[in-house]
Length: 288
Image: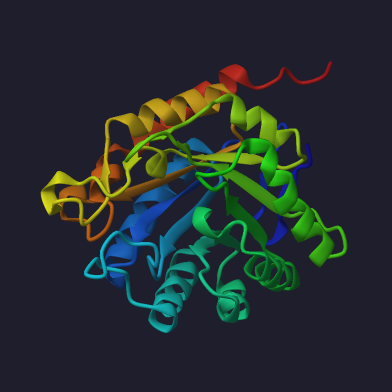
């Protein structure tokens, strides 16, 4: 498996590298909240010696209800993310939803993320790959809930063909649909996807979702099992995951999107300390 790097950030992911932390907010709510969250997570990761990428979405296009909060939109969202990047000196990860957004997003985001439901949209994958490669960033592609791990080979083939064989893609496991309103994570999927030649992260936040099953809104939004996030994150790192994708909020009960699945910001240090220890415990011993 290749080691991927963002040289301008002295950041790497893959064999023999520290656990990569992609963490932040589910969706941008305000510039002040983004700065508060990114500042705390950066401090925690710096203290632990873990590479950190701040994540927040400018638009949550895949919502259960048309009335659900989606975010500030492309223009304002990228302005806020650029401000966080500039003020705190951190790399940025955000989602893409349409081909026309590719160049603008790749100019700000160091990791451009293709959402799970869009991972088979060929035109979007190709446009995103080309723009991200031209900007010198990395791709973070979430495996669709409807795909087997080995089906990700086709995603990687599209990206490589569109970029003259370049290798700059991280795959993300986030669970598979299992009956109604439920997701299940097969930890063997991490090894299977790494076997395709890509580093793999675990999105433990979205893996605990109960799609369209929040009793508080009569199924007009997605429910979740917050208690399960640390369980899945630790299990995935123990299974060999190269990085973790986690969403936090200072007050998850007041989060405007996916609150039932995100963690309190105050608990970030404890969880990331544990994940670092798990990663160290399972990492291959250095060659003598």
